[in-house]
Image (cartoon, rainbow, N blue to C red; front, side):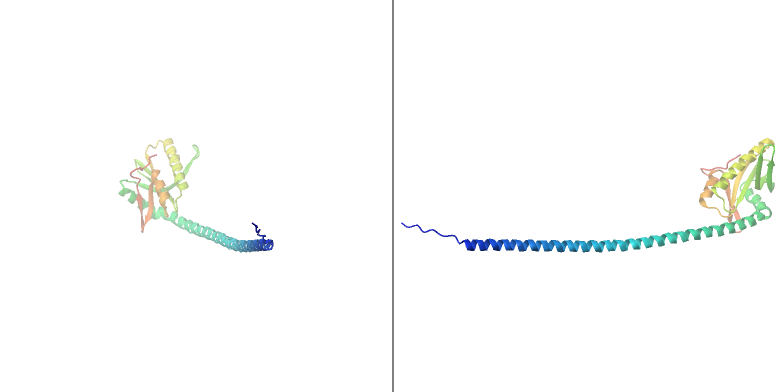
Length: 231
């Protein structure tokens, strides 16, 4: 019995292998091309982002410089306004000081009378006691046989002004004791422009607060948690 052997088609197999190799090479080239394209796109994107960031930085820098300039201009205007206001308040303070003796003083007596005080004298004075190193300038000195009211008058009272008045009251108490004056000393702060913080601070320290009201003025008495401080 004869046996028939099949001879492999080596040429066809080789062609198929070469075809696969060519296809693989083509695909690799395509992948490489796509990678290059992706890299190019990424580079372009980076370049655009870098450009945008630089432009953004420039805009921000410009805006920041403009904001700084505006802030400097605002600060300059505020400083100029403060100077004008201080100058105006200074003029007002001078006029107010001149008015104290002629207009405010008599009204102070009347206003304090409404609070139960009966002051028989009211005047401006300067206490000078070289022997005991006591010096104090008093804008309004109101007195009777039992009590003395020391009024400090400022156009725009500050915390420092209030603290200075506390020190002044201590000096006057010392002077009174040295001269056997046993009367009760009380204090008041008067202001043309009185902010809430300074007003509350003065009341907290036991001072009466005097502030304008229309054509006259009001006197606020320390009450509640606060009470008039006696020296």
